[in-house]
Structure formats: C-alpha cells, structure tokens
Image 1 (cartoon, rainbow, N blue to C red):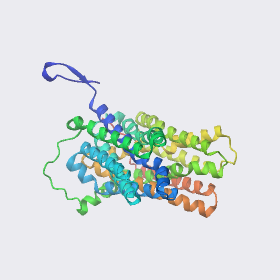
Image 2 (cartoon, rainbow, N blue to C red):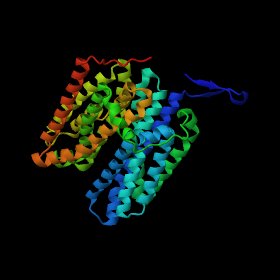
Image 3 (cartoon, rainbow, N blue to C red):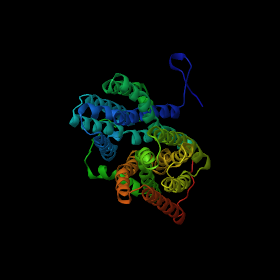
Image 4 (cartoon, rainbow, N blue to C red):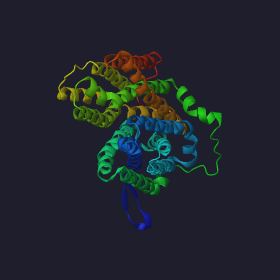
Length: 419
C-alpha cells in the first residue's frame, strides 16, 4: 500500500509510514550495534598500543553494559518528553562522542568512552519499539519487530567486515573515525522524518527524572500484567543462553574440542548469521500462526535441548557437523529478540510501551550481564563445558515450562488478537 500526497499541486508517491519507521529504526539499530561492538573488535589493537593485558578488554564491555542499563532505568521520561526519534538521534551522537573520546588512547578515557557508547545504545530498544508499535500493521507486527532486531547482529557483522580491515590497514583511530562519521550521518539523516514518526512533544512539560514513580515505571508496567512479566522472565533465560554462546563458543570449540581457531571462528560466524536470518523468518512465522508467545516457548524448549547437547560434542568432531550444530543453535537461541519485544509492546497499553519495553530490555540485559560471569564460574568449577551448558539449558527448559503453565493455568490466551 502506497500513500499519496500532493504538495504544490503535484502528485508524489511515498512508502507507507510503517516502512519508513522500520527503515529508520533498523538503520539506527545497525549503527548502534556497529559502534558498540566495533570498539570491542578493535580493542586488541588499542590494548597492544597501551601495553596492557588484552583481557582488560572485558572491562570495556562491562562499562558499555553499565551505560545501557543506566539509560534503560532512567530513559523512559526522556523519550516521553523529547520523542523517540529525537532520543535515537541523541543516542547516535552521544555514542559518536564516546568513540571520539576513545581516540585519546588513555585507559580511563576508554572506559568512559565505552560507557557513553552504552548510554547511546540505550534508546534503541524502547524508542524503536515505541515507533514501531505505533506504525506497524497489527498482522505483521512481530515480523516488523524481528526485522528491526536483526540489525543487532548485522551491526556487529558490519563492524567486523568494515572496521576491522580499516583498523588493520590504516590504524584503529581511522576505524573509529569512520564509525563516528557513519553515526553522525545516521543521526542527521533521520531529522526530516521526525515530524512523521514522533507525536507532538509535550513542550514545556516537567521532567521529574528522579521521581520514584518514574524510576519504578518500567518494573511496575511489567508487573501489571502476568503475561508481560512471564515473557520478560523467559527473555532473561534466553539471554543467559545467548550470552554464553556468544562469549564462549570460539573458546570452547578451539580449546576444549580441538578445532583450529579459524575453524572455531567460522562456526561462530555461522551461529551469528543463523540468528540474524532466523529473527526475520521466525517473526514472520509468529505472525502467521497468531501465537507469538507460544512460538517463543517452543523455541526456548528447542534451544534448551540444543545448548545442553552442544556441551557433549566429542573432541575431533568434523567441522561440517559443528557448523550444523551451531547453525541450529543460532537459529533457536539467538533469534528470540524481535518476538519478545513485539509481544511486550502488544500486551502493553500504548501510553506505557516505552516503559514496558525499557523494563523488558533491562530484564533481558541483566541476563547478558550475568550469563558470561556465571558460565565462567561454572566452567572453572567443573573443569569442562558439559555441565555448564547442561545447567544453562536446564534453567531455560524450566522457565519455558513455567511460562507455558502460567498461560495455560490462568487461561491468559496464547493468540495474538489483531485488528
């Protein structure tokens, strides 16, 4: 469906509003992910120049995660006051400023840079969800959200394919400046769309940022509907699994299962590509079935079984078989994000979507924070990967069963009622 409008007596054609919204939010999602993951990708070159241990790169990831959490806790009033598009622009420019700060090659400045990049990433989930919830056709809502969320792994892939070669050829500062230029262009290019995508801002409205009710709003909104709370809890479990796969697959395959580093990297790339493509395909399937929450539970059960089996791969497993396993792992365990965000938005009143998606993203992000640390402790305790992968699979299976029982027992209804 194409909208028509006739300024100055001439007929023009333009895409429907939901397509503009999807293109805008996807582009900013890709940009945010490229900056967030780009710093980590070129960090080994930075630590080598500074003469510090390469494992300190993990501190940059922690600082970035802290920045994301900060915005998710405090950012909803800003979105309500200034609008979703404006906050996406703010995030892109703040992340660009953080990347510029990183060029100083001063370790404390690098930590602050990573933190600012994380804060800049923060508006992407709630602001993007607010825009898409207001514009996406109801019967394609989950697909639209899933396409947008596929921008997260795509941004990481672009960072690896674009920034890493530039850093190797011309230096890491040139790579960062390239990312900064892309981010500034992205922020400025969506300015003409602001009036179409943002409702009128409440000009002059007070911004009681630190009011208790504003800080608690993301959590009270989640708790107000047992369906929303259950889906957020399931997302936490899925994030635990996804984080351990993303953080440890290469190390697991290369150190514990005998693959060469290049082979392990290839298997990990297969996992990422499968997750990105499955986000779109499974989003489409969820819209076709009309039961996104039920689909998410089934997907979690499959992922739980596969991740437990992943730890049982014998030493010397052929690369083709490892690649097949990581493909199905990525397809099931790294493709839930769009369905989750769409369901949170669908189940929440329109005026609370920013708060609900902020709370949901925060709960999921806690899984990303806790997962790698917990998995590392389990590997140290057991001395191998079988039990850690089994434990992570078991917690996901238990949470999926709990979610299914809640929906069934309370007769909350699985079906996505669309208009």
